[in-house]
Length: 264
Image 1 (cartoon, one colour):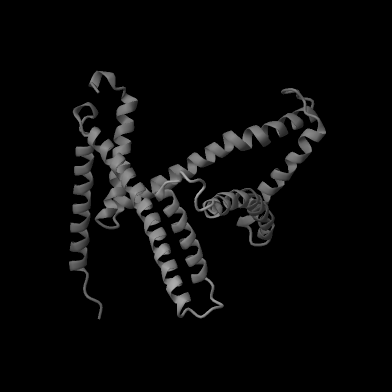
Image 2 (image 1 turned 135 degrees about the horizontal axis):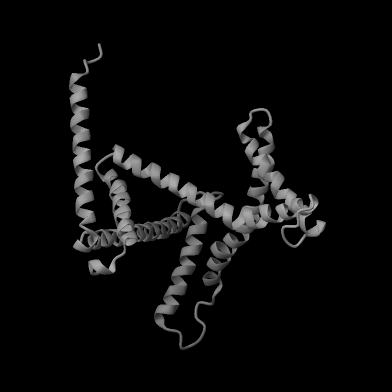
């Protein structure tokens, strides 16, 4: 992109992105102050961003604003359309639970926060468990319950796929059937179950590695794009700054170790 088409905000954004990326990637050498600085800033910025989102998207519109309208009308200050009591009484429940959360900092009344944590865990479990059961159990059971072949026109590969799924399910279940001693036919079938599980674990690991490599390739592509003249060589300059800082840090550390007398 030509220089005259880039705004100052885009250039500053590129420099910040390059700086944070190189800070985090400096861990490839070893744990160093540059990585720690990037780590702390990432955690702090993430926490601050999450707090702002929670305040402006949830707490303010759903709790503070309705309660302020009720309190304002109580003291004769009509700020907005008044709310009926039945519309606001339930708001005191999250307000009280939120106050209970802050009691975590007190040793005497910190036990009140358990009610809030219990409510959060119960609500999250109630929402997540049906989804997990549906996605990880029911959806996985469907291929097992399908007929081995649905019609005379079923392809050879489709029939073989159904047989492989059936063999895999039975062999894995027999592997975890510990009431029988694994010897003879049971041992052979359980070995087949181990083979199926190794294939599944390998595929899951390969998928995870592939996803991480995809993220790394995207980030490196960005670094290459930001190394151009239009971004004032941001990647090259910041890379040299990080390398020089780490080299100086290592030299100073080694000099300090040489000057420190060995412990007797």
